Image (cartoon, rainbow, N blue to C red; front, top):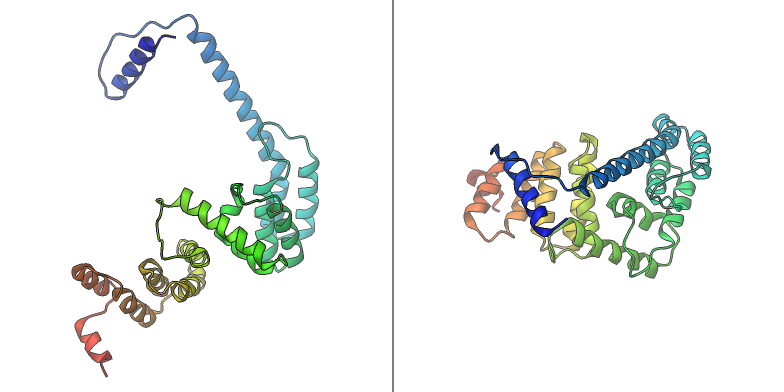
Length: 271
C-alpha cells in the first residue's frame, strides 16, 4: 500500500471519530487478505489465552481455598501441560504469585523455593520479570532468602533502576535510595489496600523516612497512612514533620490544615 493511500485511510478514520462525513476510500486488493490474516491471528491468540486460563484455573481455585497441598499438585500439572503461544518455560509470573501465597500462609520454605527459582537467572543487564517488579515480592525475597548480601544488594539495585525507569518519570525521587524506595513503594501498596494494611503501610513509610529523612514524599506518605489507620494524632505529628520539608508557605499551610493542624494546635506544642 502506498504512503499516500495509508495517509488517506488514517485521515478517514480520524474523520469518522470526529463525526465528519466523507467519501469512503477505495480499499486495495492487498488489504482484504491482510485483514483476514489479522483476524485469524487474533482468534489464535484468543484461543491460547483461553487455553492458558483453563490450565491455571485449578491452581487459582486451590489458592483461593488456602489448600497448599492442592496448590502444589495443580501447579505441577500446570507445568507439565501443553502450552501454546508466547510463554516463559520458567513460569515467572506464576512463581511470583505462588511465592506470595506460600509466604502469607507461613510456608517460608516453599516461598523460598519459588523465589530462588525466579531470581536465579537475573543478571545486572537483564530486566526483571513482571512478577518480580512487584515491591511486595521483592521485599519478601530480600528478607527470607539465604543469598549473599552482595547478591541482595545487586537485585535491589536492579529492581530500583527498573522501577524508576518504568513506573516513574526519569530521575524521580532522587532522595530515595534503593532501600528507601522499596519501603516507599511498599507503603503505597498498603495505602491502596484494605484497612488492616494501613498500619503496615505506615511502618514502611516510617522506615522510608528514617532511610531518607529529606524525602517529602515519604513524610507525606507516613501522614496519610497514619490518618487512614485512624491514628489522627500520629498523622498530625507526621504532617508537621512533612511540612518542614515544604518550601511553598501556602502549600504548607493547606497541607497542615488538611490534617487538622491549626495555629492553636501548634501553639499548644510549644514548650
